[in-house]
Image (cartoon, rainbow, N blue to C red; front, side, top):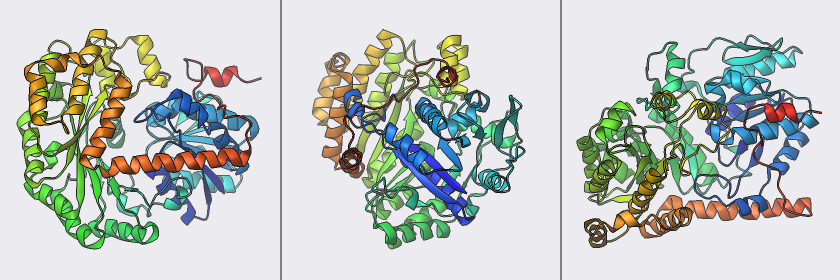
Length: 532
């Protein structure tokens, strides 16, 4: 069978794993990729440049040209409307089944299936369900009873039972060839060693995935690691193939198992030896781990701190670490001179009354760090079916209409763009701290202390928010010689030349793009309304 996967903006490990699994079973797998330059809505966003470099129409044309037997989308809330648009346009030209998988369909399968352009929704692991689906299609009749899949049957929503999570050791090696023509994999190699997370933060998709895995309403964690031996095989093989110069591990909590981490670091230093970056939790850091990471070549640890307001962190985010534990984690990194970044969220429920005091407390902790490279500032984004979604409803942060928009992913409810924060005074206050947090890692301590002692930091939010933040991010990259920052600049240059080459090759008379988002505010309305 001929399968086409569709991706937007970034490399997707889930599609690479799926591709490897299906290829092992004799299927042909292709990719249609939209780089979404200047429209990614995370680091670089410029509507005018996004129009010039849009390749949405080229992506649609590529899907049609590949003549797939089935088209698959991996979808998060950010790109849901884009995916619906592309799927609708593909359906206009070719009559082929379209399947949506990923976090957004997993959270709201029934809502997603209401769209005429979506035929099937996959919940959780998709490798075996997809293989069984293709096998049934080869035999001439699509099975409707496959576990983990949802269908439309006689106009009704049909959700099949969940199957147990697939052990990570059974996964094949990622099929990097799926993206190697559209991404410079040799610049930065992306991979993951684990599955799931030992923590269940309320704003994260894990807060609704864990009950699905456990089959109950209990917040039971499911996470597991590949063996170090198995993981090292992948890294060594791929280094020979791509000669990569940087590795990014996208595990939710890379250092969750200390014994695994120490063994891995020792082997990685000897067998790979290129700089790498990880994400982890403050409770999963001590001096032994920090030392091992430093010696192995780790150049940055990304900490998910989110807030230094202990009450909010405990009651709202449902995390157990206190501020001393977080400070201890920072101290371990400072002692071995290992760079790290901090994720901080503005606008969390419960911070409204004493927001300034809480932000001042965060500032007092952050300013005393020594090896801090960057503070990544986010505005609270509320995603469908997360526990934070219910908390926000219960506290009156979102009303019924706003909740419906979030559940249907029709609003720009995203990171960096104020998210769910609406109060102008709160926004104004947070913007001051946002800029101050960005200044902390590279400004002289004397100047930082001056801004704090004179309280001038409470009056710097007047600067253009988007421009200032981008400028400070670039300054941070240059000041700290951030590998990832340099790679990101190189990536953008690589993609710009690639897109211009596509435009010229197709001899387009103009660079006018198709609309990336459906105009309707109700999911499905556009797909129904555009039918003739």
